[in-house]
Length: 111
Length: 113
Image (cartoon, rainbow over all chains, first blue to last red; front, side, top):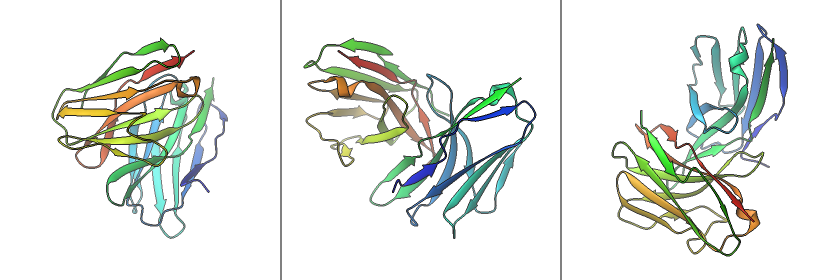
């Protein structure tokens, strides 16, 4: 089983749609959670951190369920510029700090 | 935030040769990381580059194949040794910022023939 699992997509949605991505992680010792965005042929960039209380940044809402080891990202009012791959990322602190990346969910927003 | 540059941005190499990738950060950082992203896949951590000590390698990666240097708090190199076509990938360095967020360099796209 992968440490971080995501639906690979692609999600093909019209502009203005609401789309939700899900992610599960296997290590219950995971401490921090993130969503990164990666555009084609570019490096990943942090979209937002995910907190237990849930957090919102404009059109983006992230939620964490530690009991179910589940993370979600909701994008409202999708824009063409939202087209990218969204990476679910987990910080596992054992003997050192390291990030474990999911395989990514690809989003295509069409006009 | 941190600004990270990598050299080269891309290269095409013959099998059996080695390539050294440089990563430069615009400020001093404690932890630097090297990742590999194979075509169509997500990122896999190769090693953590520690200043003043040997790098810490993840399972499946060894120092002989991927030697790393970290001479100071703003610079690191990753060498891909004795390359084969299976090493064709994007190699990215990243830095830990404020103990929580990682910033990535633009990546080095390597093709091995």
